[in-house]
Length: 89
Image 1: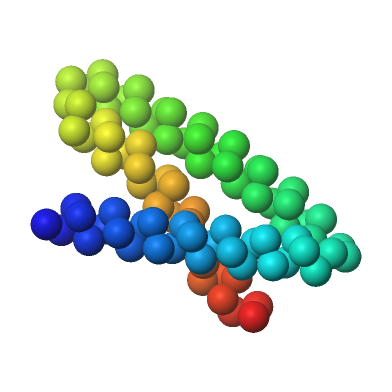
Image 2 (image 1 turned 135 degrees about the horizontal axis):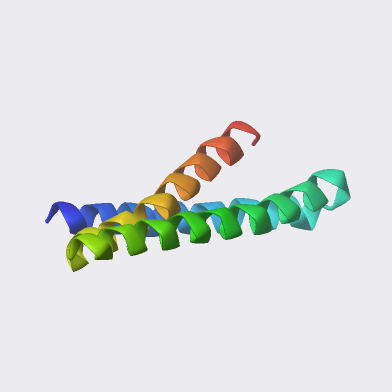
């Protein structure tokens, strides 16, 4: 049940981050360009971290552990972005 609540929170946080980023980009200006650039670099960094975590977890032989390790960088990035974007509203 706890995993379900965590997944629901992740989805809600992700949707709010997308909405706030779209609003910022729609405003235009230098903040829009910065947000778009940051969005891309964060995705690459989260993917790279998740990939490394998966490979190291799979080396130990635990598929469930690999899935949770792969999810962690995305969860951290989404929560950090939500906090950052909410503070600027």
